[in-house]
Image 1 (cartoon, rainbow, N blue to C red):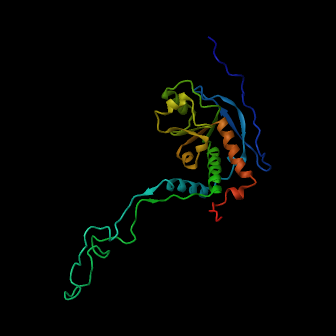
Image 2 (image 1 turned 90 degrees about the horizontal axis):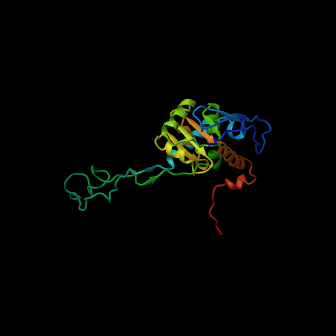
Image 3 (image 1 turned 90 degrees about the vertical axis):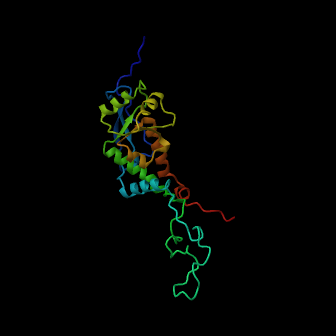
Length: 258
């Protein structure tokens, strides 16, 4: 039986960067394998500094995290107004003669058990749209922080030889990737083995590159990206950074008056 052999190392030696930087040095990272538990360095690649070597803006990262927490939050706190409270149909006492204050209903907001003025009304959505540049720079800042902290790993592919969860656990433990790992590929149909192996663990998650976001990257200790996912991510971010119609594309939507 013939066994597949890997070509001599390094397999990957260089890659051409789009929009070559003029004043920044590309960052170099190792590309490793996932078909063995022990790590093998397959080569070095350059990462674009405009994407992976920006100075992390903590304020922008916080804006992105806060936005992601709020846009899916709906408050169901609810209070009843005076017309919704049961009772209070008749006047509680005569207007004159009793010497007490005048009232027309026991469901007035000044009565205990009455309606509530300016109280919360449900459902209340906290959705809002964060600015395009804030979202774009949030991705750049988080990716740069992950790379600077050595929490960004590049692999050739997500193919593993078995669907046994113990294999994936041993691989992560051997390479010191931490308790939680986010695996990112360039498409949403992941290899079968890693899909089955990661399904047993809630802290090993798979995500397509088009769904990569700030909150998910910060939630996981290590970010593992395939080489094709890195190229796709760089392509999209650099396109938006260098597009000629950025002002029109990122302008706030206005309803046509025609």
